[in-house]
Amino acid sequence: MPELAEVAYACTLWNGGLKKNVLAVELRQSSRVFREINQVELVESLLKTKLISSATKGKQMLFRFSGGNWLGLHLGMTGSLASEKSSYLAHKHDALLIRQAKQSLIFRDPRQFGKIRLHQGKDVPSWWSELPIGMLDKTFKIKILKDALIRHKKRPVKALLLDQRYFLGMGNWMADEVLWRAKIHPGLRCGKISAPKIEVLFKQILFVAKGAMQSVGKHGGDPPRGWLFHVRWKDGGKCPQTGKDLRREKIGGRTSCWCPQIQVFN
Image (cartoon, rainbow, N blue to C red):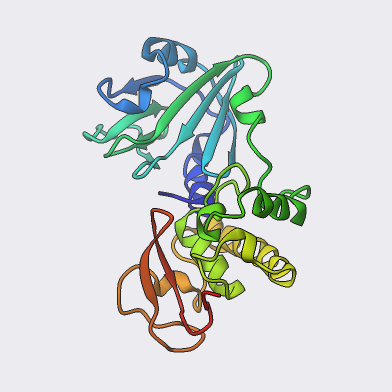
């Protein structure tokens, strides 16, 4: 599933359509991404409007159109955005096409776990404004981490980091990266993490979130060299810090990768 930085980069792929009029809206009506909205209403709301602005929060995107129309997108597991020529012919996985004079803005989702939302009104939709604060927000403080660790003291810390109520946009590879840098075993119970380690953990949450946004979020692709990201995806990877074998197995229902040499379960 696309995480914080991948979503931020994907959002920029529609930037070419900003301040431009919508000439036509095409849908693949059978796609499950429309499961929460009326398709006819969606087309009527966006047609002949202008794309005003875009924003991301965690794993979600919000596009503002003129006339008080707001389009929310969640990419799910396989969703993606693209911009093609105005003459582009829709492919079978293209769920939504927004036609403009010089380009077509596309949301495609082969597995259809993504979601499209529509809101009409002068103010931003409540499902957007009520999202938790982001990890890079100035109000994101260590107290959020400490309170979450206390509230979920029996959960593996890896599972907690994936909880979008606290760490908006954190996904599987980011959580592994954070814990590897903090030298904390992903299966360690939240209540067992010492006060000094909590400080380190918070510092690494910020480091990974900022680093991902400054690399993947701006240019797409992968994080910088030396990150765990590059060796975590399959068995046989070597730790970038120690050169020793990494371990991979499910923790809290998600495949986790760590270095037993520096992430000791205790």
